[in-house]
Image (cartoon, rainbow, N blue to C red):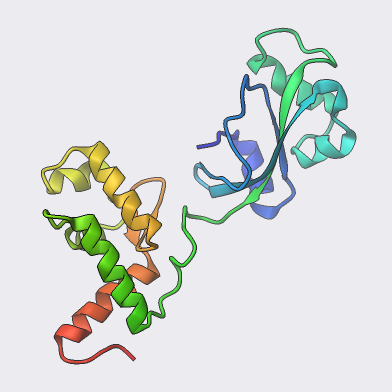
Length: 206
């Protein structure tokens, strides 16, 4: 998660805010990373560089969502462990809005070939091991979209933390999507489950 005050949300979504400056001891994000910003979805980090207060230009000030350099400095002071000077180190984080959910490539693709389905079956079988759980979790999420993970886990008699780890495994296959609260079966996951249902009925999806 990457925290932003509410006043920056609209600018992040419309693309007018593309920078943030942070007083971190070490980087907490990395280029290419996707980070949740409640409640607007996720942001994707384009670059992280070390800089100083004195190096911030007027263009940076506006890209960070401020009207003036003084306003930006006033924002940074409460989170700085020492008084700000031109030499004070900062991290300059370039970013852009990455959508309304934490999706992975392919999650929105609902067109599955027989080969796609075969690969997914193999991967799910490896995840299942000796104690099948993947389809049970997928069907639970399908029945209860955006229900808190703790409540989903409880329905299976499981602890929340390991349940979340398992759902992340399904997400890496593009079968689920994570939201601020709970999950949904992705379009790819729905297509996979639909394929299985139609195969049992005697035909493959067109």
